[in-house]
Length: 68
Image (cartoon, rainbow, N blue to C red):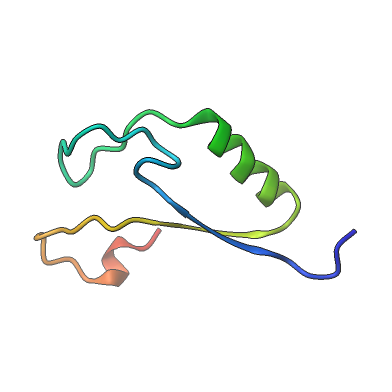
């Protein structure tokens, strides 16, 4: 067993989800199963996983409004 957690950062569009074209700010493409399985494996090992995106929004929401 490892003595420390690893941290992984994974892009949403084109890595975890299929991206072919912009639809709207809330549309997420179908999952990329191989990457989803990899992320689940990291989580099962206790690693930290951060999902990020470079999407922009003109909605006026603050960062805290978008955190899940």
